[in-house]
Image 1: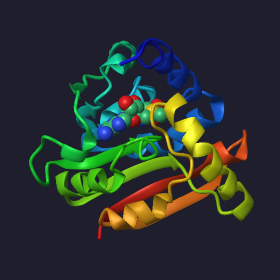
Image 2 (image 1 turned 120 degrees about the vertical axis):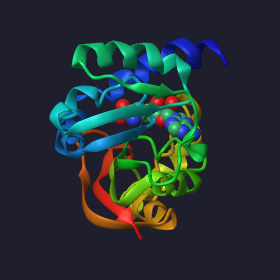
Image 3 (image 1 turned 180 degrees about the vertical axis):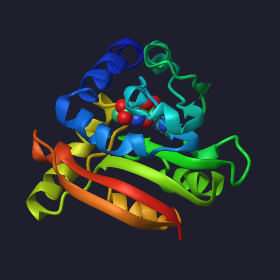
Image 4 (image 1 turned 90 degrees about the horizontal axis):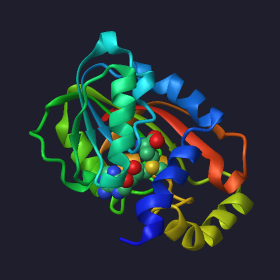
Length: 205
Ligand SMILES: C[S@@+](CC[C@H](N)C(=O)[O-])C[C@H]1O[C@@H](n2cnc3c(N)ncnc32)[C@H](O)[C@@H]1O
């Protein structure tokens, strides 16, 4: 791994993931997590302050990027939440079938190399009636913005840890075996190719 990816990128991602409009989205979604929870791509632990501790029985955080873990552990102590960290990719979740009440993914489906395989794994580990809570940026509805997303993604991806600007989040969720229960979408403040946001919940189709 090069020096940029090891040292600078975690700080940049943490800063971008901590801007106000993004924090507001976390506040709408993350408190809905309940029971035994798996967070996919936990990163630097930006969601940790937003969990409703009274609704959690256990929290697992999965992320293959070890360089993100120290900050996540710091936030775990600040939030007073125990997190079982798994330094593995979501395409192969090392957990039994039907073992979680909630799976959380925020700003991660853009980056996971095989997002459909990862979603199928999330579906597998959810209990019957369990929920996927998602908040993701992706394909904008305006053709001109989407064209810019397609043009910029090859340049953006190496700078942003593999992030794609143009992924069709609802289509990925469906291909991954989910039925979208509720979903809202809008441009967050900021450059339009980077900010089209989808959030809501999904259950196994
Ligand atoms: C933009 S960051 C978002 C971090 C965090 N979810 C948040 O909301 O702040 C994307 C995260 O996806 C993680 N990631 C990359 N590939 C992954 C994979 N195959 N499985 C799970 N997470 C992955 C990265 O390590 C990174 O922490």
